[in-house]
Amino acid sequence: MSPTVKILAIIVICAVVAIGGYLLYRGQVAQARAAEEVVWETVDQNYAPQDDVEAYIKDDAIAKGLLPVYIRNYGNNRKVLGRFKGTNYAQPREGVLAAMNPGLEDWKLIEIKYKAANGLEVLRAVLYVKSTGAWSVVDSGTMME
Image (cartoon, rainbow, N blue to C red; front, top):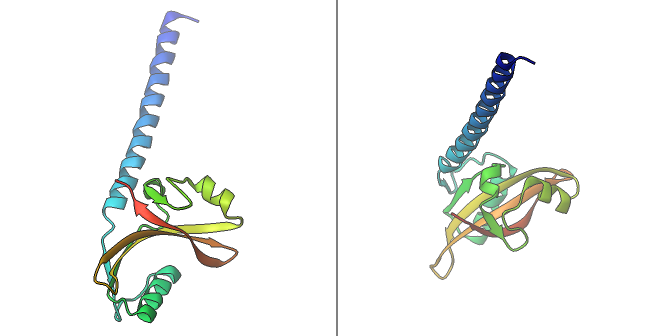
């Protein structure tokens, strides 16, 4: 192989690695920004839930007399899942959720904020999983910064 071809091959390999690294970085930054853009939603009598989990949260809050409740629905954002620290999971990955929850179809991470009966403000993150067609709570905890 001639020296010119070797140099050209090295340049092409470096360019491919640089472009791949940039695209990976850009994807991570976009996902982090998406997590930062999630705002607190006020759940009261007039709130229209976006999905079954939000409907459950609203119905539960009505039944317990806790309205208004504030939620941040991160959905299934992997970056945010890495910030979750609960009783059963600490910074889990999707593979861990799939291994621990047979038949995993989907998952959601939602932060919930409300005033308890004693007047204290409660802030917690709740991890919901959907397996075999039904949503259930698998863990509750906090979000690490």
